[in-house]
Image 1 (cartoon, rainbow, N blue to C red):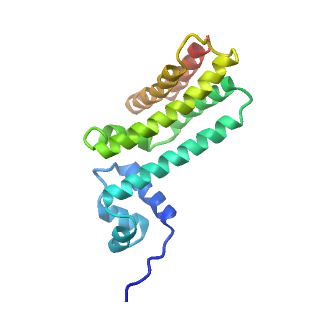
Image 2 (cartoon, rainbow, N blue to C red):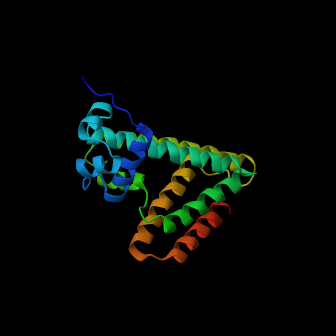
Image 3 (cartoon, rainbow, N blue to C red):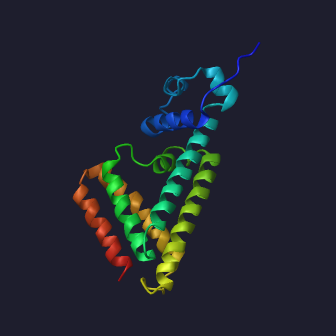
Length: 192
């Protein structure tokens, strides 16, 4: 008689996500995953699937959590301008305090160039993030807090790509003061 598989899938995906986040997709073995998740291989294959399927669930979990946190953060601010300042400042702080970096950025550079499925999911997630940021930018423009001659979506994309550049700079130079100054420079320039 087959045993019933009983485990908290969300908890196990979180554990797997941390392994992928720390080691990267290619350096993570199935043994690393089953050890971290504390389940046997057959349970993993029978409930979630193979390494790629598990990774896709991890990416989904990571993005959903990040967007939920972002939306909650933005909702607490009194204006669109303050929300953007908070998002930018917090991202700069996170870049210097998170040793693992961003799973989304790692995935975009490590796997997305060769894996169409991953690239499509990452592109869709990026579009959702940019669209959300563009609504905040547009609100700031509509409220007279930002120059409304620029395209809100382009401005949102500019902000998001700044984050990637800051992470690269921090990886290469390890200078938290430089990251703080770049975030202040971005804020100053988008709110001229």
